[in-house]
Length: 299
Image (cartoon, rainbow, N blue to C red; front, side):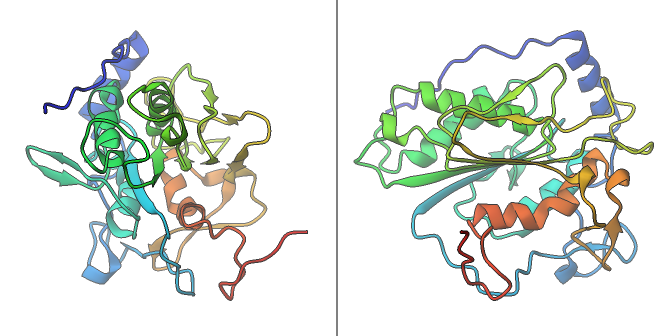
């Protein structure tokens, strides 16, 4: 049976969006000149003596007991844009349960290009296919119950909100299966956007910066510099908005040798470098674990 893709209105290409496409496309995202950092275990790097150090919580991370479906959504403009390097490294090197890859003519990527209307055209069908474990064009009690995780950066955040809305509207899916278990957004941004959390998201986290330094990677992008959007949450939702620019401490990055960024100097493209550990803890529901790996019970 031929899989029918959901139809959704295409994103309107406003003058601001068009200018963003042209500028980011011409400068590779206005960031570094690679789609990822080099993994420390492989030796070397495109930056001398600098590499990506994997998450190391200091204790054995328990395997999920439920089927997991995880997608990474990049920012503008695609997986090879230098501005996505820090985020794409998380998706490339970390153990993300049930990771769905974006496979195209030139090969497979561990993150999805989520610019403009691509979430509606190509990403949502991949989500549906992953949840439809028996391939019968429906998601219900006949399928294995899988938890959906969306991990995003920049423009990927607002696009993930739209994907959650599409999930809630999809009549091919039983109402109890139309949920996003974890929506983890790093520095979500899109011009002229309000970030409102749909009610079918069980857990949401935002890590962002509210004040950009003079050398921010997005300063000369249309509408730049990009300031991470706060998340508007329904009442009684497991939702946290974390403004890293307000931290009282220096922020350690994922890079080796060990390096730190002062909160006022944290730029749009650097937020993934300092948020990675918290993202992984939220993904594995380890936020209430202490240094021994035991659950800390909150009074």
